[in-house]
Length: 235
Image (cartoon, rainbow, N blue to C red; front, side):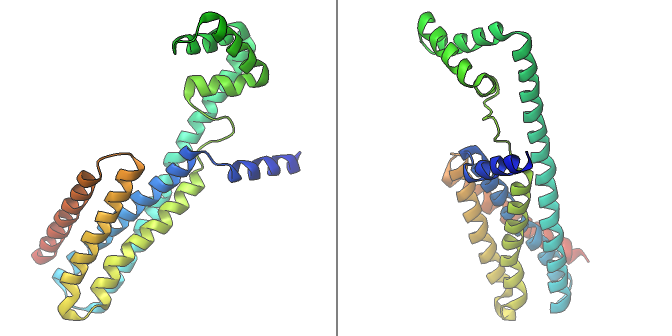
């Protein structure tokens, strides 16, 4: 039994749905964007208050680690909740199927009738699908869930952890390793380019407006740097 379960899990990993893959990528893009903005915020605040390079580096590195784990834990909790909801919906549908098979079949028939299929053809489709895998058919129609393919919280968490760390590295390296004369312009440039990239990727994944997403991310990045710089100047 354990061996069969392992084989099933392996097959599911090998045949992830597009939604599962996009969810992992989404977590990565959001993690990267947060890593960039969070780390540069701390760097600008500290660098505006002190010129000690070691202090600036430690502050940025500490924030990078904290941000990465925070993003990962948040993604894990969020996607775990989604997974639990999906599994609960499947369990509820299984109960309904046992109680009222005819009613559930009628639901499938109605689904196809609403899409322009004749009653007779819709009934034939419903009977055929229900005879093959009734539960899979119903959860797909009612909840748009692919049976056995639930969102993986670990995939989202690791994607967010890695990308937040990678994103935060750009401003950290620029601020702490560039020559002093280039630290500020180099960091600003690194942030603008990296948030523009995350804006582009998020728009592509979400089928949104690429130009709008890029401009929005750049504006948010500039505002973030501006606010944190002047917060540091206060002290």
